[in-house]
Amino acid sequence: MKKSTKKERFLTVVLKLIHKKGFKATTMRDIAHDLNFEVANVYNYIDSKQSLLEEYLFDIQDEFHSAIDPILDSSHTAKEKLSLIISSYIRITAQRPYEQALLVNEWRNLKEPKLQEFVERRKAYENKLQGVVTAGVEQGEFRSLNVEIATQTILASLRWLYQRYLETEVKLNPVEIDRQLTTLIFEGISKN
Amino acid sequence: MKKSTKKERFLTVVLKLIHKKGFKATTMRDIAHDLNFEVANVYNYIDSKQSLLEEYLFDIQDEFHSAIDPILDSSHTAKEKLSLIISSYIRITAQRPYEQALLVNEWRNLKEPKLQEFVERRKAYENKLQGVVTAGVEQGEFRSLNVEIATQTILASLRWLYQRYLETEVKLNPVEIDRQLTTLIFEGISKN
DNA sequence: GTCTATAATTCGATAGAC
DNA sequence: GTCTATCGAATTATAGAC
Image 1 (cartoon, rainbow over the protein chains, first blue to last red):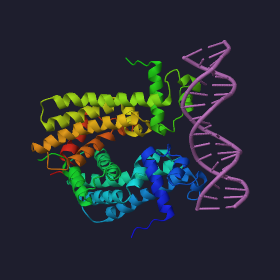
Image 2 (image 1 turned 45 degrees about the vertical axis):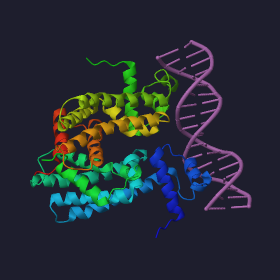
Image 3 (image 1 turned 90 degrees about the vertical axis):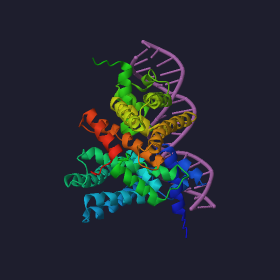
């Protein structure tokens, strides 16, 4: 059953606009136009343009943290943990691709002190992932590599995926996407 | 010998500002302030804010095309070609990290018809890379994978690298970065 | 919730003197 | 090339009636 409250419709329109034009280039007039009413009405839904960005940016960021924390606390091996993190990342991206686009592309538009808060929380997430990579190297599950570069590369391999949901018509099986990305990250492109 | 013409100094300041705040959020007044002169003087260097973006965006894009074309025309195996493409990408990124940041982050601010032109040229580059991946799969050098996902993942693994040059103090040996990323893309993170 | 009207500010760009 | 001065447009946000 598809529920679509006014608030949800508002959010959908706004996130689509921001994804297409960017946060700064998306004006209140653009939003009002796509919702077929006047500019003043936009303020029935939000307090300000800035608060809109802050609200949804930190909300989706929280979801990523909520997903990785129980994995870190588990008793799995590093390899198993990394696999679970990848799967959780893909699951969130598939469920909320527009918010993921916001997270990846628009965080620079935050203002202090929210900007610093965001950067610190993102760094914290990266450090959590890097801890798993480091553990895997130390325990001989992963090859002896530069853990910072490896961590950033893993993240980069996941951060582009939202585009697949927003900019292409082709909807691959989520299980298949998971398998492909997991294989690429763990085993690379080479056959042997 | 470090040459620094006025035009070069201008470009450095502008690209730093855009990287920090984003193109839209960087005003002519910001640029003038950081160059220690008045707003009107900015127009001694450029015709408009938009033309500035167009000029440097297409310039760096051209460099990537100029680097990949001779590799495609060569008689190397797909695996060798991919390796050369990765190295060329890293070399350009190391030489022009600010322009690479512009390429990755600010293309959405182009206006039609330049926007469409940019997207088509970027797609052309991606198709060139995808052709190499496809050839490698067909010839059994690469595992049997989804070539579109693989291509996007390879690109994503390279597109984050400019951050390493702009946002961290640590300067890794370029040869070492090349070796790390090449290994990750070809062999992945797993030991076996 | 929706509208009209408008305040207050900021922005890109130009004119014209030196 | 550099300045002062300013224009015209666009933007976020608010006031107040319905």
